[in-house]
Amino acid sequence: MTLTAAPGTPAAPSRVGPASLRRRRALGLAACVVAVLLAVVASLAFGARVVGWSDVVAGVLHPDTSDIAQAAVQSRVPRTVLGLLVGAALGMGGAVLQGLTRNPLADPALLGISSGASLAVVLGIMLLGLSTLTQYVWFAFAGAGLASLLVYAIGSLGREGATPLKLALAGAATTAALGSGVSMVLLSRTDVLDTFRFWQVGSLGRASFTEIGQVLPFLVAGAALAVGCARGMDAIALGDDVAVGLGQRVGVVRAVGGGAAVLLCGTAVAAAGPIGFVGLVMPHLARTFTGPSHRWLLPCSAALGAALLLAADVVGRVVARPQELEVGIVTAVLGAPVFIAIIRRRKVSEL
Image 1 (tube, rainbow, N blue to C red):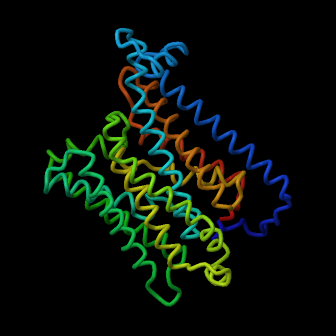
Image 2: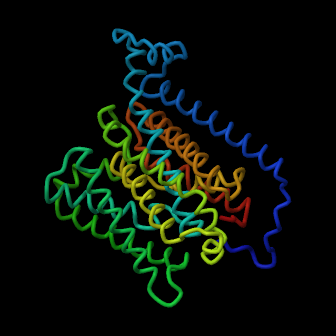
Image 3: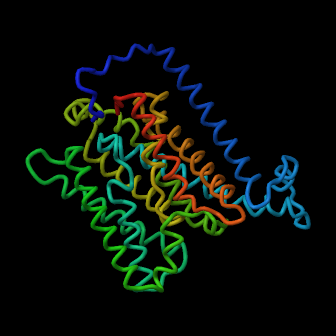
């Protein structure tokens, strides 16, 4: 699906040659790497205490715990790693969802994945007293998977099947219903609200290498499944009939890709809470230089997602010093104008 072009301004065919496209992709990938490196350095250097470059290097390579600056850098390392992983998962998950549904507005929040994971976690906290990330992960997977199936089932009703528009409407309705369920639980149980409220707005402040080790296998599995579906999603972008004609098993690609999206987004939500706009905005930004090819789009979306989330986390630490603004709030503030700028600049976005 493509975004609706402005009336009377049909999309012009691309005149970019193969050599120019390869050069643009290579430059774009290099820019992504530079953005990630800058975000990592900023994440290690900025916080309640700003440290210098020499302390950043020493704090990472051979930290002296008696030095306050190096100890501060060392304490920021797990937070930075978790930010990279969660941002990459959300960026790649958003690209997978947009490719599978052929909907440029698809992201974990719109299709009910984040809301399903949130409701499952809050129910687990209320009914079973969940308190660890390992417990959150499984409930988040269950909630995200069930919400995805519900959205697809509702969107498949009728003769036309699961069209991009019907999936978007079904996702919006499901997200609203699940969000109401979360609010209902929290309003009736203040003890659950105290546990849930900081997780709900999205935060990297509780990161530790133990938690990272718990979520890493799921993220690696999700990324591997997504990359394995890249060629199939390229074919689906041409339409289901064309994809079948090219030898792709559309149902298998959608099932595996959907599983990848649930793994990536469910793990990200369990680790850092529901964080919006990363999965929606970053694939569009990456598509400006990768084109529609998912073999380039997936890694570039992941890199840009990681850079955005780390940058948002740094901004949250700096603007409210010595307190911190949760990263989920900052991504919403930064992501909305960026998305509007992309849409206004391009007008038409081909998936």
